[in-house]
Length: 114
Image (cartoon, rainbow, N blue to C red):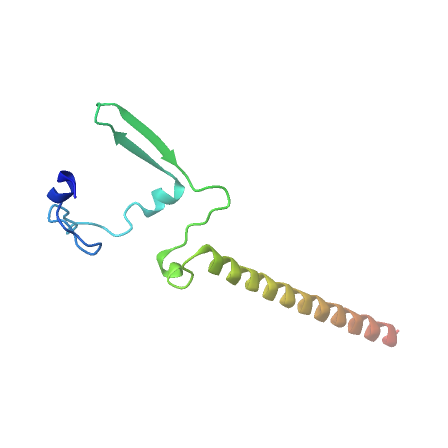
């Protein structure tokens, strides 16, 4: 092990360093701004600053946390949406068929009464 690694504290992913204080943190404080796009300012060791602006790629969707519980990745989201689209098409076809049947009955009733 090199000297740099031996000086670093042994931390697991679930541990938080003592200097990180989130007692006054607000969950979701920057959520809406992040969805619109966000700017990151990077202060380099040589005192230069790099500013980068990030936005969601075209077609990208950011899911709300409660939705992510049910759809953890793009594959599950796309699968669910495809099933929903299929259901919409079936419903639309049935509604269209019902409308045609009702129009036919209406036309037939009008023709019979004349």
